[in-house]
Length: 261
Image (cartoon, rainbow, N blue to C red; front, top):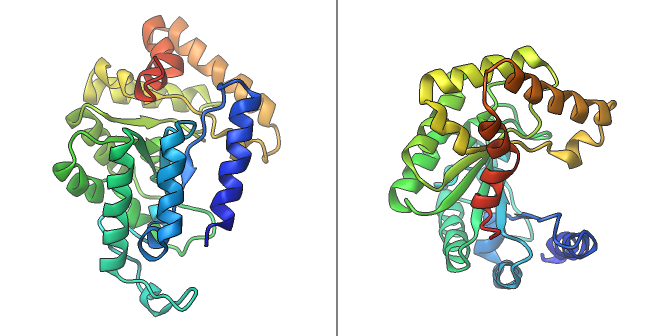
């Protein structure tokens, strides 16, 4: 049960070495495996202890919440003769959070639909589950991947839940990964809405991320990166954001969140 994560660790630690520390990986983990397999949990613990991986990534949108809720029908499934239940996922999450906290690491959580997931499972990735976790762990560093993208017909209120938590907790951030910001109109509309609803301080909690591994598989990947960068530069030129906010979203916030200094 450790072969896949061992490959993930090996490849990304080599990439970190090859880029002289520029490419900083995040470790994709499975709370079900944390619960059932001690060697898997020990491997996650040992990997974070080495310090190359600064945090872990969760994919609740495949069918579980960070509080242990699971999607309908999943309890009937078995893997390696081991089942799944709300109590198993909840205990696995708690064990994972303890490992993360012991290494002063962070958690990134996928907040939108996941490819290959059952329709509707993305509801389990919602902010209300994180609200419960953060009430008991207010100092935990959390990053909401893709900013709670309101695509897939979930509506703006979906993302507002994540933004509210970012406003409430000091160490809770988000990234813009895989957003359609090659379109300037989309970027401008979002930035103005964030500023109007949450104040300019919200720009100290957001980092731009291209989600490069996924973007690189799409046609026109290089043009996307250039167009996105140009959209942000235009936002500065037109006074939507200022130079310091631009630098914060492209560098300072990630540097501070990852505790690189």
